[in-house]
Length: 283
Image (cartoon, rainbow, N blue to C red; front, side, top):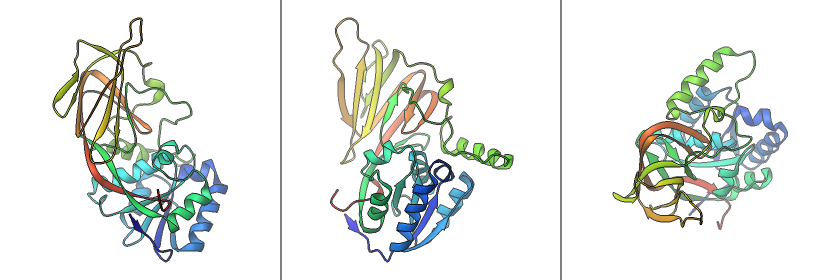
């Protein structure tokens, strides 16, 4: 892993949802980062300004202060610009950050800010689908409801309708048909064909309760299929590989913090060491 000096120049992008959710944590993070490095602070009002700030980072190392959706948004933007491999992201979590913490980002504001300054770059695998969407952590079919997760990734300030229009337009480009949780049917048995590296793991004649796909290390994803249980609990079917294809009738899926679909076919491919996240040294 590559280590960083505190003299690095930082581009600190503070997501608007974080400023609304916990202004005090945002202030603490900004103070710690500014005290330890040369930091340019950006306060975007919506996704378009967020994207513009990230695109104009120059040689500065980008630091996102925000929740899981802000992290996924940054990775998605860099991936679609084909700039992800050469950009080491860092994050200070504010808000719903279960994904970021599962990747190794400290949950505390000060600890996370110190990791940005003194931490190390860690290369991570990434799932990329055939619509150019990305998955950092976990993929689930069907999408189990998550309490407390907003349907939209950024809160739009009241009284700025033009921002709402811009926001909705960018969301449509960054995710394959995102769906509000209130519109997602309750999960139930589904008939899906799941293929891993071209080999069929489960076919359409076997109803399944759930499918999960998680990128690991070494360019491989782990796949777990839970067949529908009748009476005794069914044994999960486990597999691993570089490509995962799911075929079915209008299924939805949860990729990290977002719900997408319905689709009838989707293929995910593991990209080994596709992106970098700054974590505490030694992790």
